[in-house]
Length: 152
Image 1: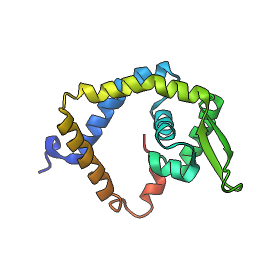
Image 2: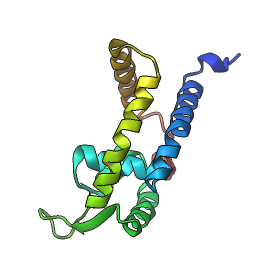
Image 3: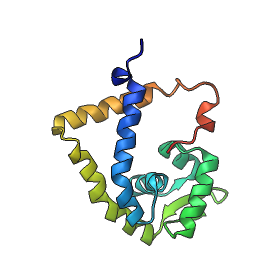
């Protein structure tokens, strides 16, 4: 019999939902939602990205990401521009306003980790295990499922 309190997908989802709930008020104060934050934190950490790279790094499918980026442009969080290396390609980059709002959220994002009450070593181990879990589940999706999935 399946026990929910030891079923990994259930536990990961519950933790994720609780973290999102704790972060949502700060996001709303900056005019963002969770998906927008995922885009902005990737751009903050990695710099301007093509839509394909941004889709992979945020786990947001391309069609959803396209609509999301359009909404973010309306909010002046990001801008699309031609890639200097390939004029046929478009990259998404944060605007100054987007950078300002993202940086304003960094303390609240860091506080979520602190609230977990882990030692530095425990937190490092957890992050390492989650990265390993993510890498190990790359092939676990049914064929084509990754393209249809809309992650939040």
